[in-house]
Length: 452
Image 1: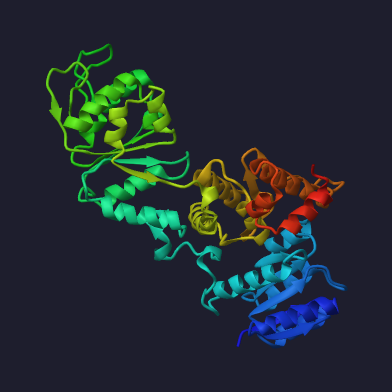
Image 2: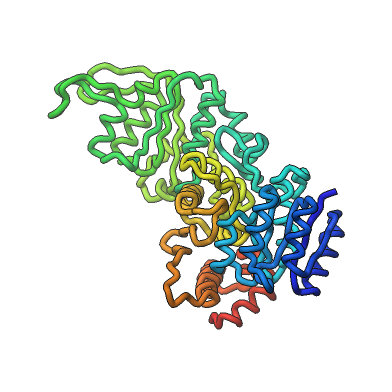
């Protein structure tokens, strides 16, 4: 049976944790005195130690160091009233597994952290609902480099498998940063063209006066600087797939030339007199509303329907929040290896901040946040001080005079609540749903912070 030691000088708190953990099926020993708890750890083996951060006679940091000196493999979870205070952060740097704030829903949070710690140690199997796990390494959660358990993402995976081997043109729709190129590559890799070239072009990233020559190539002497014949991207992609990203940025003239390639599979190089026939699969993508551009006369209707034979819409990250923990785990693993660090997890408070963020830059923004977090972090777990959200940075220097921690946390909380209220046009009920808190909890926080 899994053995857990609970250390807390508050008898009421200690008793609540003991009863709660026993109901979960663990063998629980509780101790009031931290020094006696250290002696217990010397004599017995505990799989997990849960301790209050503030205790008499010995600090939580000293207690943690003593446990790690005698039993370095023992996982330690901290209970603290100061979610991101300096002491808690230092404890994480000393090797604590995670911490739980003494606040609303702390028991549920403790159950989750304990479960996660025991899964990490290999003592129990992960039987939590998939949307609450952070295990992105399992094959069933990924497909061709994409990660997702969201229902719409699973539909996209199924669509890719069904259409990959058809010759039909595909239009991928979605906001910037949602992974449109990954979808295009997955279609290519699951098709009979997989061994042939995959050529990706950002139509909006190439100046208009150069884009035609990049796409179709040119003949020697066709313009100043054309010193030799040159193939364009369509010829380079012969037999394979060409991915035209940001297709909505094409000029009307280029739309006409692209339409000919789509319809007839032929084109001419700039300055050329002969038609070049090319066998290539065309996948286009855009973050624009092409239907609206067609109505305004900014995009050819015939080209739109030629490209949009099979539409694939990728939802923004804010609409697939259950995938955020999976993506975070994957990015932590990637950048820990890249930066040669031993970071394998993210604190529960950091996860809460990320789960409540809207990610206007979608997966690309999340990836950048985790990359910076891994690069900046000096402990074995990503803490809030290492996270940067767009222009809002959750990192601040602690001066010699100190900072008002509660005030700083209130600022962060206020910002997130105000963003949620703005997004829901003042609806507290909908804002509570966005922030994953109860209506009563949100109302209490609004009153506490004096938010109008």
